Amino acid sequence: MNKLAMAVMIMLSLGGTTALANQHHHQEHQDHSHHVTLAADSVDMSDSIYHLAGTWYTHRGEQISLHNFQGSAVVISMIYGNCVTACPVLVNDARRIYNALPEAYQSHVKLVMVSFDDDRDTPAALADYVERYKLNESAWTFLHGTDTDIRTLATLLGIRYRKRDDGNFDHSNLVTILDEHGRIVERIEGLNRPVEPAVDALKKIIDEAHLLHH
Image (tube, rainbow, N blue to C red; front, top):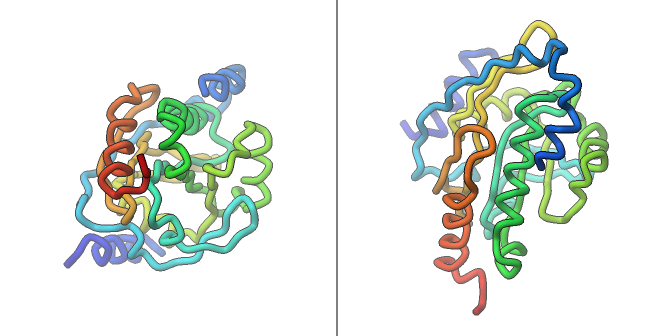
């Protein structure tokens, strides 16, 4: 049984910039401060996440499938908009990776943030998030999906999360690099990690796929 099939079975059994962080620092003594970091699971790095069926909606109001990102190198993470602790740092970590790339490589990279919170993080709410944190560059895509698709994608990426009674989430802090076919080539677990492993992985993907014409 491949990883995708296992992910679907598991989900059905379950029922279906530093500036970003600093802007939220004054709220850290609210309930959000009880966020528990969950260790990421191991994954099968030979499988493509683009085999996952499902319809997603972007912060721009577009309806897409994950395979729309095929052909680009992708930096992907999972967050939720009401998070005031880890998630702003994860978003900023993706931005740090992107900004550390040589300019010629940046146009071949997509930054994809998928929300755990299918109730509150509607496309309109995600659009407000993008505007609030000035993430309007074309490289960014924030995704809203169904609970089942979110859970299945999280399993394929090895990201663990759980919803708390207050409506917020405990979750893994993980940034993943995908090649042009949607296969995992690098995982960076934790916050504010050095960007070099991710940058090197992205450059290798782009060079080997001949996406960049020197």
